[in-house]
Image 1 (cartoon, helix red, strand yellow):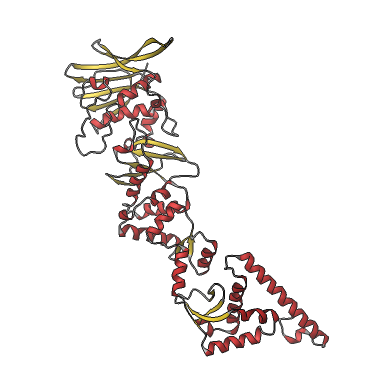
Image 2: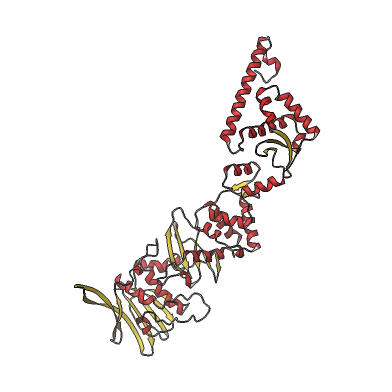
Length: 496
């Protein structure tokens, strides 16, 4: 015995609405309820041939000025000769309960895409069931779905009933609807703005699902691009006549506006952190589409508060230059690396790039020549530690030594003016000689190599060279001391 899924809604319609493509009882939106999707007046006429091709029995019952009716469907073969070739197909026969028959002037082979799954989805019955549900829901938000029905009957007075043969895949769509019909599931949206759309928990791992007013319109298997949630956008201009996504760009911009309205810190935090981590995520792209005009001060502040809580106060965007990024890291900043779209968004809410921040910091540095006291201190250190060593005595005078004041206190010194000046931060002149000497040698090495800290290989090669050179110098001294009969241990406990 065949079993049917029965979909019943309040309201009746004329049987001609079922027979003439383009004719429908939803010619005008009856109110401002944007849930009505039947703007093409053709869903039933396009879905039914697909159902029949798949071997699914369909029946519909309603009433019009001609009386009550139950409509079932059959097919009739037709053929004709064309250019010496016999063309054969089948035509759909409309069989009414009063014995009258009519024909839908459409070949059974028409509209083949209607029996294909949506995108990467696997359920080929969705398109057909969607149209039957949409017709009922457009007429009556309180429509009823029943399963396991064994008898096709005349619809109750003032109502319309549609019957579709029950299949496991059809039952799956009804009993586990979150991946296809959001309004049939018990899953509430995480966030919703009626005129824009909604955000839902992900219904299927490893798949991105997009909805229009509760109906699945696209499904994609995840590769390097991923999504954190399912997304539903409102608007009749988002879908084609076959209820698939018409414009990804228009859809994404609608979701971008939805994002800009989020006030829930937890939800927005999940989206921001996921976008930061997943460079190619759908969310990362959507954030990049939020226009400045859609960002309220409150939204920007909330985003910044979330990001500062997650990553710290001193956050910057990567400049794309390893040296610049490394320089800012050495000054205590956290450099964030993310995708192109999300970087644009972060810049719009006020997070600076590393190169912009370095420029700002450099603008605040105040350079000056040494005071007589500072000059005397440097000359003392140089004479005591460096002038007796040819390497330093020959190379150090090439670079001018100056002072630099950094209000932030982030630097000890720097190699300035295109690596031609060794600059020591003013507060460091009060430190012990060893610390000043360390800064002096470090910045001298930058000037000598003309590379920043991030060029570790070049910088450390120079340091290794200097260390070996100094060890060789020490050996020469120790060998001479030994010839004089003096033990190195007598010189200091640094010798063994």
